Structure formats: C-alpha cells, structure tokens
Length: 74
Image 1 (tube, helix red, strand yellow):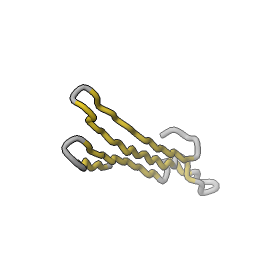
Image 2 (cartoon, helix red, strand yellow):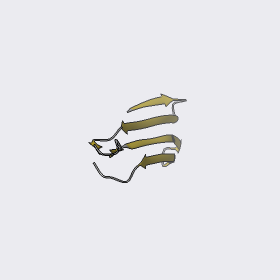
Image 3 (cartoon, one colour):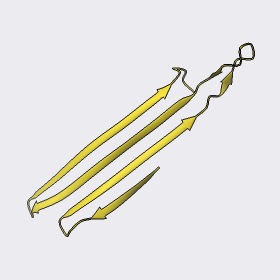
Image 4 (cartoon, helix red, strand yellow):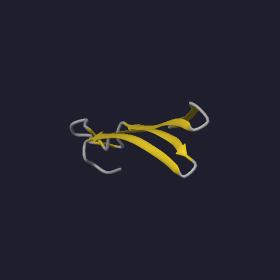
C-alpha cells in the first residue's frame, strides 16, 4: 500500500494511491493437493484537485480495482 501527493502549482495537485494483497490459499485438500482460499486484490486511484477561483474547486478521480480468486472466503 502506498500513496504520493504532488503539487503541480499553488492551485493544482495530483495524488496517486495504490494497494495490493496476494494470498496463496489457506486450505489444502490432502486427497488431490489442491489449495483453496487463494485471492489477489489490487486497487488504485488517481486524483487531481484544482482551485479555479476562491469559491470554485474541482476534484477529478479515476479508480481501478481487480479481485481474483477461487471463490472461497478466507
């Protein structure tokens, strides 16, 4: 997990944030050797904030998330 804030000027700034988690599984079937409970989670966000005037501020965001796994909840 991490983030970074970058001011581009006195009135415009951008921020990038991301998080990720990987789990190989916690249950193992001794009969066939299959592991269950595997899950990969990734998410990110890119934001920009611009103060156009003292009374007007725009915030624009783009989000992305991906979750994969075998369907068993840990």
